[in-house]
Image 1 (cartoon, rainbow, N blue to C red):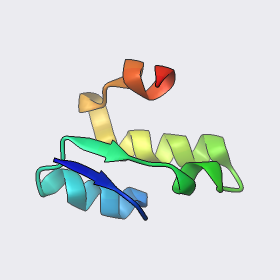
Image 2 (tube, rainbow, N blue to C red; image 1 turned 90 degrees about the horizontal axis):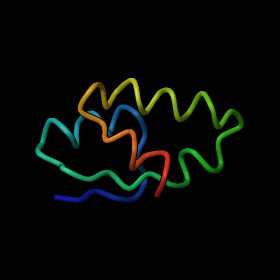
Image 3 (tube, one colour; image 1 turned 60 degrees about the vertical axis):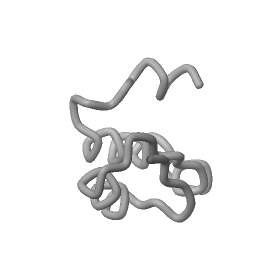
Length: 58
């Protein structure tokens, strides 16, 4: 299952717990005042299961 639109670290966590395999995160990062922190917040929520290669490349 893929989830997109309006994701925050909190809603991303709920989506994962509900069975999401793919999170499409855009505006929460691109429109953040601190992009690096926004990325780190999401990666912290995703934990070790995050496909970091795809996070960095795609």
